[in-house]
Length: 291
Image (tube, rainbow, N blue to C red; front, side, top):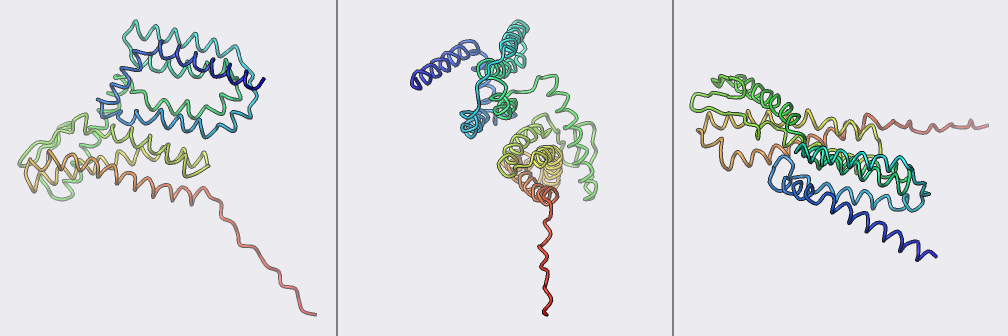
C-alpha cells in the first residue's frame, strides 16, 4: 500500500514538473539568459538551488504534515495562468515570471493544503529574488542612487580639499570627468547584498526580528559602501590620472566594496544579536547562617 502511495506521489510530481516545464519553457530560457548576461542579477542562478535546500531542510516537517487539499489553490493556479497570458500578450517579462510563483503557490495549496504551504512559504518567497525588477521600477531606484553616490563622492572630495564640481551624476575634477553611470549606481551591490543578508540572517539567527533587521541593514550598508567607492575613484583619478578610474582599479574597487559591505553586515549582526538577546542575570546563591 505504501509503495503504491509513493509511486502515485512520484507520478503526480513528475507530471506537474513536466507541465510546468512545457508551460514556462520560453520564460525560463529568457530568465536564465538574463542571469548569465545581466550583472545586476547574476546572483539569480544561485536562488533556486538555495530554495531547494531550504525545502530539503523542511522535509521532516513536510512528511509529518497532514495533506488537506484546498480548492482555492486551483483558483490561484488559473489566475496565474491568466497573468502569464497577459504578460505574454503584452510582452511584459515581469508578469510572466511572477506568475511562476503563483503557479507554485497555488499548486502546493491545491495538492497538499495550508499546512504544507505554511512550511514552504519562506522558500517560495525567497524565489522572488531571482526575478529581475520591472524596468520602470529599476529606473526609479537606479537614478536616485546615482545622484546619491555622486553627492557623497562630491562631499568626500570637498572634505579632502580636492577641487570638484558636480552636475547631476557627473563629477568634474581638474584632470577629468567622472560619470556615475547606472552600472555604478550601487543597485547591483544592493540587490546582491540584500540576497546575501537574507541568506546570512537565516543561517546565523533563529530570531525573525534579527533576520528582518539584518536584511533591512543591507540597504544603507550598500548605499554607503558605494558612495565610498565613488569617492575613492575620484581620489585615485585626482592623484594618479584618469586611467586610475578605469580598468583594474574600477573592477577591484567593486569587489573590495562588496567585501567591506559584508564585513559591515557581520558587525551589524553582532550588534543586533547583542541587542535582541536578553541578558540573563547570574544565579544568586543564598548563604545559610551557621548556627
